[in-house]
View (cartoon, rainbow, N blue to C red):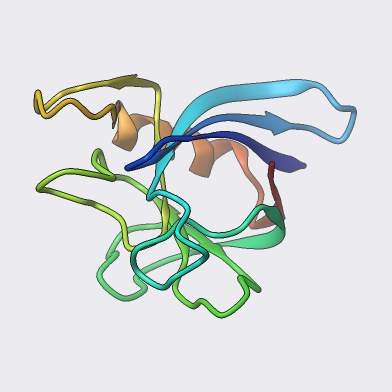
Length: 139
């Protein structure tokens, strides 16, 4: 099983269309992702580089007390996860380089930036569908 994210880079954030693909190349689930802008992989201010990464389910790491996904082997980075959140730009930011998930985009706080909504429900679906370890492909 694989998770594939196709990104669209914007000045202040990175939007993504994500797909879970099973071993027969069938689409199992589609959702949206939201990340920080790409700033040369700088810690806590940039999304991670394009590439392939192993991912594992994880519980209680750092300031994430709930079950989520930990992305492994990110060059020059640690603690990069897939978790809930709504904002990647503006006054409130829910990521320090992690991938936020949701069902769609909307400007929920009227600041002119797209946010991701339905994050908790989407993460719950991912936890139910994805195995304990899988591959993430970001393009």
